[in-house]
Image (cartoon, rainbow, N blue to C red; front, side, top):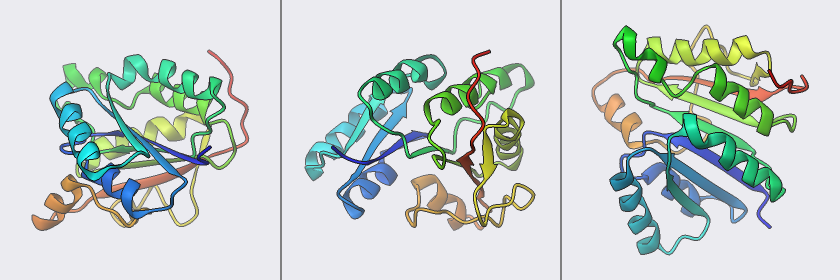
Length: 195
């Protein structure tokens, strides 16, 4: 059984981050990429097959609708979630559409429930400061997550990528000379309470 699971709720584009993480890192690394757009998932699955990778998979789902079922299934199989990444989600700029953002109170609560092992990590990154601040606010208000060592929510533009592997969006943002905003959290000892 593999010991490290990373759940990637990311704007996948072509899945390069997850594919590279799966092929360039430890053999005990498993990744699950979630993406709402089926054609993107199909492309990622073709790229996975071409590279012959067996420790990465992609699902076409709506994280806000399907995440509880996915994490519950993994928990029933005794699969620990070590890391959840949320990288460059759709910003939904218009006020009336902000309720569609991936990170909301319900999503944070779901992640807290199923990453109850102390030390499970949540990594957030965006090239839109307002969106990053909104995601950070949701995680900090929950009370279930603490800043990881070396990460400061008041210095989002200075926090580092802990993986050493960049997403396509990250590379494109840097090529334009623009900043990327990041935050890493660790699950604390607060017991999860169903609301």
